[in-house]
Length: 313
Image 1 (cartoon, rainbow, N blue to C red):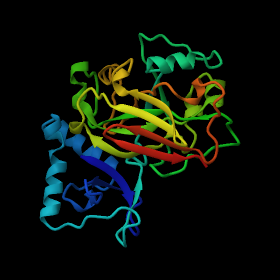
Image 2 (image 1 turned 180 degrees about the vertical axis):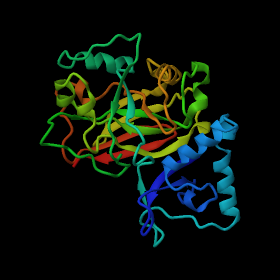
Image 3 (image 1 turned 90 degrees about the horizontal axis):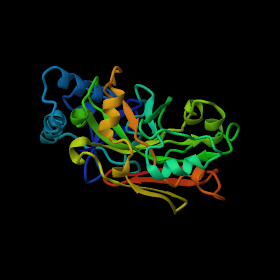
Image 4 (image 1 turned 90 degrees about the vertical axis):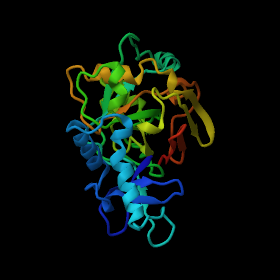
């Protein structure tokens, strides 16, 4: 199942919906689930899981499947994509306002770690342990939204295509073999980075967290649709030129290890977004390649999820 967030005229600022194969959207606010936003959905399903509901993937998503069935059986009205008549809607990031900072993995593909080590001599790492950092996200752009250049602050704007993992239950002291049970779904995260700010400060937080620096989308694919651990083709183009081309099966620290490590002594709340790291091919690692500038079109693709498309402005 694919889930999105959207806005319709005279409706709430954001609503969650099911994106059906024919391209129409089923608004969850008009089902009997009692939710409006994607964050509402995370909390609602987490509550079901923690109060006796079946926490297996099939059972976990059963409320969504049943809500969809009843909606269609009762003659509910599907909504059209933007530009398709008076019922048209505007697609947003699937999680426009994450409930907490996005947790990120640094240097989590071998070849990207190697290209980073050669950038100004500022990156070092011990591969035995994951590198964690976070991004502040006041509002996540969606596919089609611009990436602000912040030309007054940075001259070294870069992209990082990453598989985003979204938790559907509160996670604490999770064993690696149980990690998949806590995953709600997957999305694409572009970890936009101001390299000059990132390396100027001892922490990466500021250079990763400027407004508009965390595009997410185009949708969330629920975890029951993707085999665990995900082995998905991941690629990025800039103005049509292929820059990144790899597979999420090549993570140094896999998703199960990430969830288990982070949840030791720290509760990860339902709705937590984890960006699992980017493969080789960012501007930082390429000699004589210009950093992003206004007008550049960045397309981040992951197999089975889709394309996250943003243009620098």
